[in-house]
Amino acid sequence: MNNFRALAVAMGACALTVAGCGSSSRTQAAETDASMVGVNAFLWRATLDTIDFMPLSSADPQSGIIITDWFAPSATPEERFRMTVYILDTRLRADGVNVSVFKQVNQGGNWVDADVSADTEVQLENAILTRARELKVGDFS
Image (cartoon, rainbow, N blue to C red):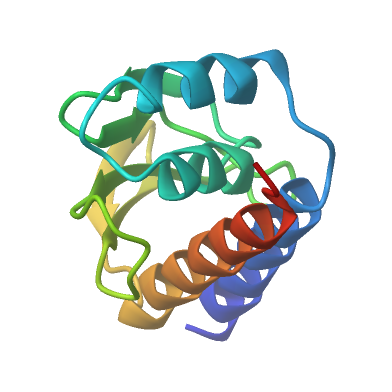
């Protein structure tokens, strides 16, 4: 469990580090898409910024659902993670984003589902909300 907590902290640190970086073309495209639909553009862009270290499987700005592909941190290649992020509101609210994290561990060549701390999901939600607030404060238009 301590190993997973360390990984959760590392994932959160990666997310926060990535969130502080400049925008990528993926983020710019998402911002354009989000401005045309009913999800909060700040939450949409902040989510993509925050989870940029994970490969995307699907991102639908109309439904506000972002799904990543499996990601195995180099420090723990016997574990892999994927996320589904739901943007639930058109307003920038604390309950406007929900993150589900899925974990699997490799046991004898087979990937087996494993428990994920709810704290990991909360940390990612908080990182997304923090980035969304930063984006909103920086938006002077």
